[in-house]
Length: 231
Image (cartoon, rainbow, N blue to C red; front, side, top):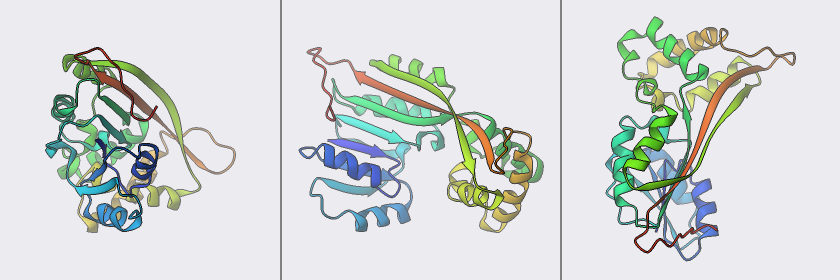
């Protein structure tokens, strides 16, 4: 049994199901529109299903593999969520997370809230993002052996300011529950605030640094036998 947390439109979850044809693969997301889209798009795989749930509220049934790609940084109580995931996973099972940590990209968004929408500033995911070392601490405390831990500097490239606004708009409400009527003002101000964090560019594009974190861990097996579903 495999759970893909924060599955979005289900494309990655489908790839997992194709690579693990003998496993039940369940895509989980808190967005009803994303689950509806994924459920309609991928009906040809009998081992693939999608469920509407929040990562924090999951009651998992002894999964062998848990994955989460570009979603865990939005979780408002990530330590509790990690504790729950580690508790539910089978001995010998694995956890694979690709997420992002605090960096200039999220800093300019938080600065925008602080300046122009202070009533919402404390509700932003910026405050609940785990520091990188916290992942290893929590995983080790839950009997998980960290097999991979990679912090990698990345660069987000936007063609222009409108492209940047469109990109942020796609996940803005995951970052902060800002009312719809404030989105345009926030995005306009955020683009202006981002100028302090942009990298020098000679091609007219907007380049902003961020940091990705990949963590892979395995729960200590009773028989010390390691398994990997996707290998």
